[in-house]
Length: 179
Image 1 (spheres, rainbow, N blue to C red):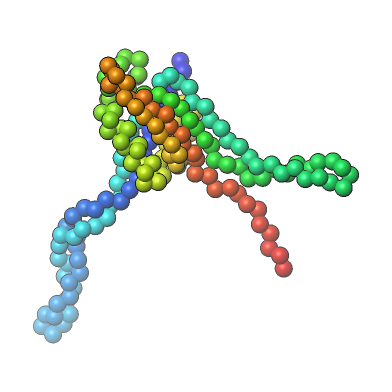
Image 2: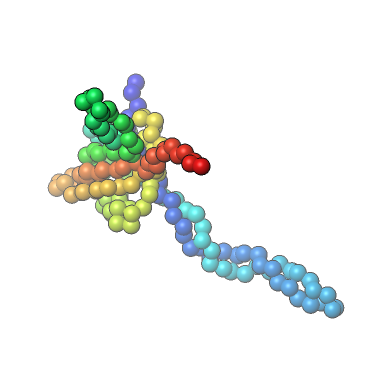
């Protein structure tokens, strides 16, 4: 049986939290310096994440990856082709965020579709890197959201959307040291 395509988006960020933190405090006791640890409330930054799992219906997800090619003429009037750097994988699909729990979706929990659409809008607006995991396609990497379009479907309150994401890809460059 084939695995349904569901995508897990995870956004990592730093959040402010007030915590009790141990702080060194030096005091002079009987002519000697003594270090004591006192707990104080401080605002600290903490690593946080928010994960969203969405199903893709219909289950089609085209993926493209390209490489740059240079065609160079040679002295013998032939063409020499050199392959350049790869670009990151680009994926585009169209689906919907369900307002109700449909049986064919195979998800445990249905989130508010308007909140999901706004969450993706915020990621696009703030140029956030998100981690994308697609278990059915063995994909697990960081991506940029390049475009996100959505509209509300009348009657069902489902939100149709179209999204384009591109992989964060650092090409491998060979270097030589010239003496």
